[in-house]
Length: 132
Image (cartoon, rainbow, N blue to C red; front, side, top):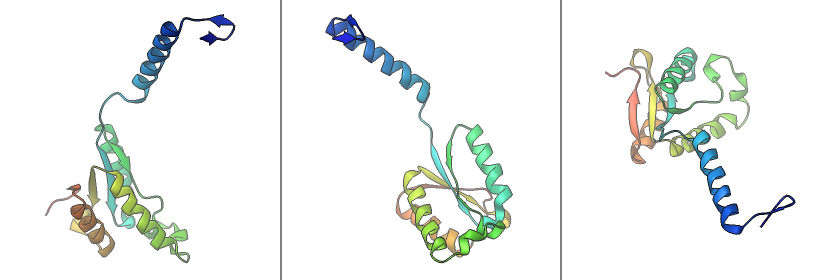
């Protein structure tokens, strides 16, 4: 094998490549992390941000909403955007091991109820900020 202008024996070249790949892998993944998708009314933006921070510090990969329609992101209400975002959120649930429901005061709206049911049907763990 040629490595630049130097002729390197094949076995040595393969061993070097394997070592480089192993070293790269150790930088990218230290352990197995639970993936959690946040669900709840977007009126609770502060609680979403706090839950994201706390769950991340606990060693989880956290997937959240992209826009907070009930907290001022008016783009959500443009034609077709809300239904697209709802569908995207189901794909986020598909990628997760669990969902974490943001439900201050026990509030769970219709969209969130649908997401909980979707997660349940798909065998996802369901956790709540507040349990009844």
